[in-house]
Amino acid sequence: MKKNLIINVCGWYGVIALIGAYAALSYGVWTANDSVFQVFNVTGSLVIVIKALAQKDWPAVVLNIIWAVIGFVALITFIK
Image (cartoon, rainbow, N blue to C red; front, side, top):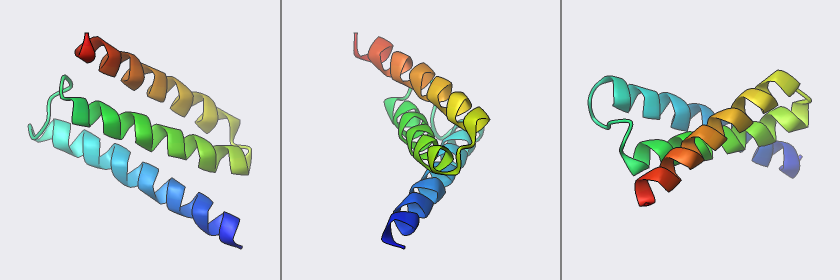
């Protein structure tokens, strides 16, 4: 029961983080070069990976791993 709750909370955080980041980008609050935008992308997609793994939703796992890698590489680029 507790494990399911944690997995569901992860899933909801991921949805909120990704949609929130996209909305902030779309409305000019953030730019793609803002580290906070990429942090939300990386963390949101990684927790969705956790949720997708629990459900054995392999397309969502692959999509979100790729999404996280793109965001992580962008963060590394900004730091340099």
